[in-house]
Image 1 (cartoon, rainbow, N blue to C red):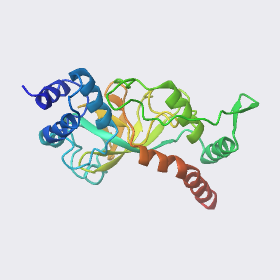
Image 2 (cartoon, one colour; image 1 turned 45 degrees about the vertical axis):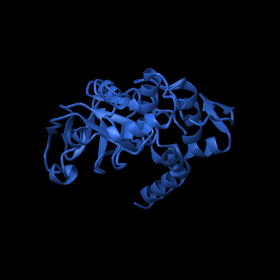
Image 3 (cartoon, helix red, strand yellow; image 1 turned 90 degrees about the horizontal axis):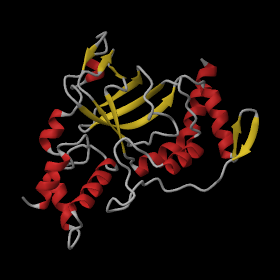
Image 4 (tube, one colour; image 1 turned 60 degrees about the horizontal axis):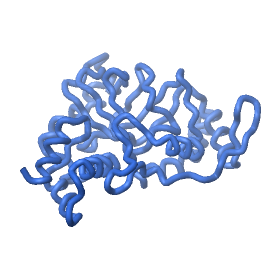
Length: 258
């Protein structure tokens, strides 16, 4: 069995989205001689999780066909009180917000972060200004971030940039997208530990297990049926962080006018 087929077989036994053979072939032929199989697996997984799932020929066609949301989910199920996903679905995060906190509270927090200030109880503290690049792993997977893990420095840097600070009682609403480009809202039914503003990256991948509840066209996230795979689309995340304060100010102004 050649290297691309070996990688394809190995990845098919994991929760990682399954790439196409042409994509794996391109990955393995870019290095001469190719690295060890374990290193190639780590590289493949890192690059997959940092890619846009809607990229043509990225995913295995059969996998893509069987891991998507039902067509027109929000429109066709908007009046349906409750249904369940019949199959596993892989999605990527396009937006996340903490709906348990007021918009103005989040605006004030971000403005404090922009001034280089944070709060610890009633005490104002200065936050360090250095951040890392958030890529998570090298080209060949050295220092890579495995399933269900995240680099602590990465999370700290993102909290400084996006004003993260979700508590265990927070409730988050996300916009997620499947590999065919369909976008839906997803709301925590129960707290999912790895989902939080300041912790979740834009472009991060999530596997929704078969049996996940969909109510009124929105996916309800349950930690028992939700696998946060990790990843990040750098350009998306940077734009989201840079524009978050303006979006919150606009929303807060609309709330006041309303």
